[in-house]
Image (cartoon, rainbow, N blue to C red; front, side, top):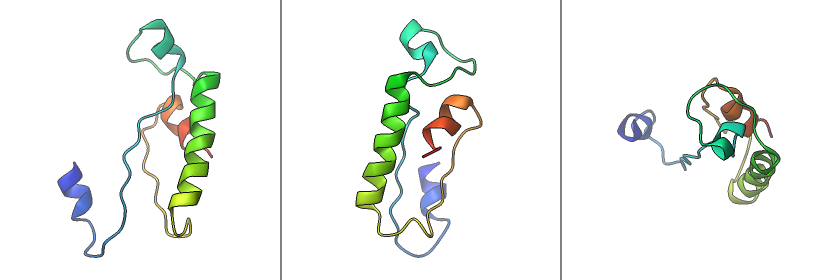
Length: 78
């Protein structure tokens, strides 16, 4: 996957791979499903957006790829 992503364009740009924030299933030791984020997961999501704002030169051209589960889309929400 990384080889594919790195070869999509011929210009240098940063690529960040990030897992979703903590979900309800994570704290219960369950796998799969489509749980929502916990409060801790929501906090991670908002802090990730702050970090990206500080470390990214521009949100204008930023692409965000995410899975379709609630925990993934909610992490990318901010």
